[in-house]
Image (cartoon, rainbow, N blue to C red; front, side, top):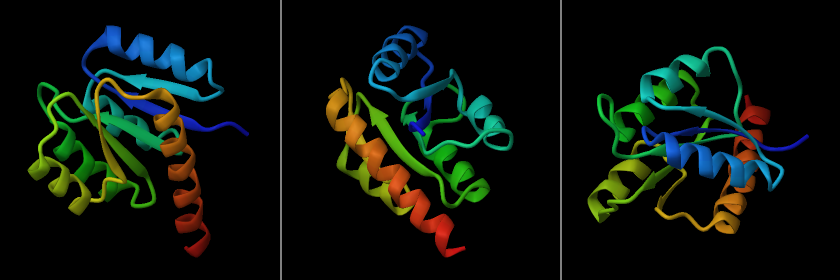
Length: 128
């Protein structure tokens, strides 16, 4: 079974390009254009990881991360940003993010992180 992720970003062009590139690498990709939409989908669908943009209108990535981890503590979230700061990175990790990577993301590196996220999620689920 392949990896299943949700890609969350308010930039639709970015979503389309990343989704296409990840799909061509054997990853099942669902997309959401807002944090609110993504959180709503967590109740209905399962994902190995969520790739979440840090800066979005409305609810930002850190706020979304809090909600996602409350709803699904085993969920692995990788934050993606074009505006990384050490403070945001530290805060994201404290809130439960698995990683913080800068745009443009290296696809092979991202694929590795998705694989690690799935393994980490499985370990958590097995312990429960």
